[in-house]
Image (cartoon, rainbow, N blue to C red):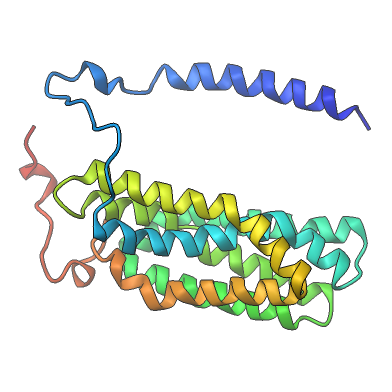
Length: 243
């Protein structure tokens, strides 16, 4: 029941303090003896464009679900405001759980299989959302979308770091494509909904989620994957790694 201005002022103060404390542990790469000044502008390599497309699909589904899930339940399924807000909670909760458990899953099954199965889950979630006759199935759909897209972006950055002769440019290119998706997704969903309906908008989200299933192979080698996702080449043992 407090004023929104007070809420945001307190949140800003808390985040500022936490940010200052966290930044003490960040490495200052400018002080590295072999550090080179990066170019002011560089076109991303072709590999970054392909990997970035996977990140684009995942972040589009993420942005659409975070910003429009509650509106979907309220306007399309005519639910109460409290139940509508629960859809955002369901999405964020499953996404957080999947992020926390992601390393173990990737270590066991590899990045390609993990993202492909995640894409199937996200696609199934999208289909549940657009076909749901009531809020329960829609809530389950948003939860599945969160579960399916959770680990895609970290794996896209990892794959970019292992592609091409200049990993920093590849990572920057993937980041640009990926976060551009996050900027345009909410407004794109609104524009499609205005021209057609929110159901059609989340049909677009479902199609992009299926893109994860189709394109997961470009993430081969990202993360600490088993040999089957590394083309049969085993990584060196930890004891063999030298400074």
